[in-house]
Image 1 (cartoon, rainbow, N blue to C red):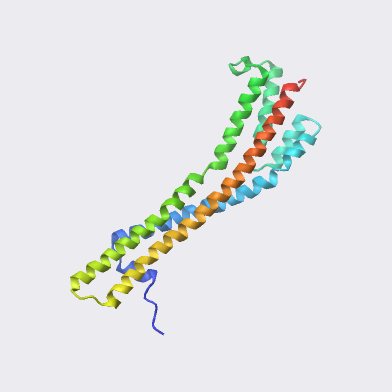
Image 2: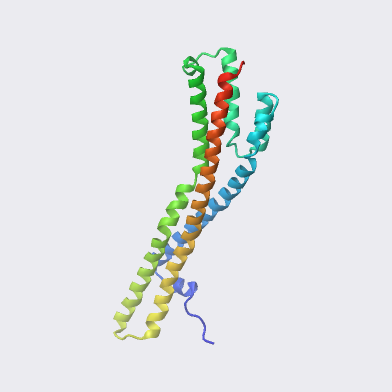
Length: 224
């Protein structure tokens, strides 16, 4: 059996600085992509596991007990900050705090506070998604650049020798095509992860909106 000449080692040995740069860029993109995929997968799992704690919050006997229960069950701090801010708002109102926000009507204060908490949660949920989307969109083209550059060098070598021999062309061209395959290998997991995380984020944000609505109703009716 003849040895396979279409290998990454052959591509690296025959490549120039640009070919090496493209390969290193794809390697860096893959490492960054998998870092975000793994870290956000763990975060998404913890967030979805903590979602039922919202119901535990409403079953607590007091607001402080509910905040404590939500804090313990929400390690990613997605749902808990809304309850924390609600408790802080009630304490500030009871203490007669003086500030520009304190001059707003109670409903406006709670709306402002909950909106800010949801915005911070949204920023946390969406962190890293832009990187995944960029990698998914550009990695195939980076790989294609490596392929085009490799084919260019293969044709340049043929032109320099003046004769066309299939064994002289097939090897470099086959090795160059590996870069396109690597680009797709980098891009596909990033795109799939991006879509999956977006779905989790939509579900989580819908739950946050519902929690904020219920919490605002509680804050506006609280006798404290």
